[in-house]
Amino acid sequence: MQYSQKVLDHFMKPHNVGKLDNPSVEATEGSPACGDQVSIYLKINDKTKVIEDVKFQSYGCASNIATGSIITDMAMGKKLDEAKKITWKEAAEALDGLPPVKMHCSVLAVDTLRKAIKKYEIDHKLREQDKFDKNMIAEELKKIIYPGAGEDIVTLKMVKYIGFEDGKAIIDIDIPKFDKYRENVADEVREHLSHFDEIKEVEVNL
Ligand code: FES
Image 1 (cartoon, rainbow, N blue to C red):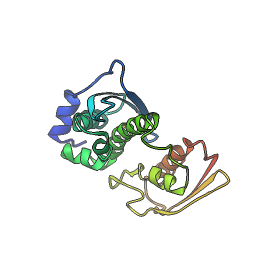
Image 2 (spheres, rainbow, N blue to C red):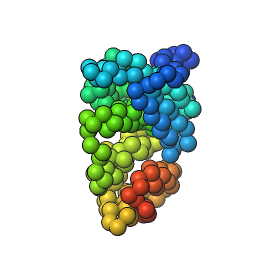
Image 3 (spheres, protein in one colour):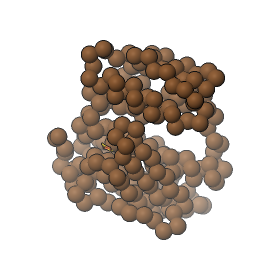
Image 4 (cartoon, helix red, strand yellow):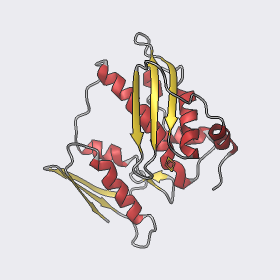
């Protein structure tokens, strides 16, 4: 696998690794694609809403450790409103790119940072809990990377239909029969959506 020098540098000597004592908030997220896990700890100034310290722990691969390192660098000293806008694409660019099959590792790290920020905002009544609807399903599907292109399945227009009724989610995916990632994508859709309490059943049509 071809990694950039920057990925290797951040992997060999990751920044901001570890745990914070008494963090303002912490979040852990797992990747349905590979079973790996990341935790992020934030120390936030309650008045200014600036991230004053951040650490991460990764049980993931080299790409995930490198992304954890770079996004914690990017988030450090930023206000929450700015930090939550960091995208996995920006993180991957800051690492001088990641191989397409490794983009989901970057999604995992950024998603964990966003989850921590959202948790803090809800705990501090800065935002409401998201209301569950089809848009939320669409947002979740944007976290699924098609490994052949290193882009998410919504942006690639592979998602043709999203339905949700009586606890059942129906997702139609347009992916060729011979595509080697076909079952992998379907499994990821099922995995991602199974984490919502509101969804009792997932039907994926390929
Ligand atoms: Fe699991 Fe990279 S393969 S995080």
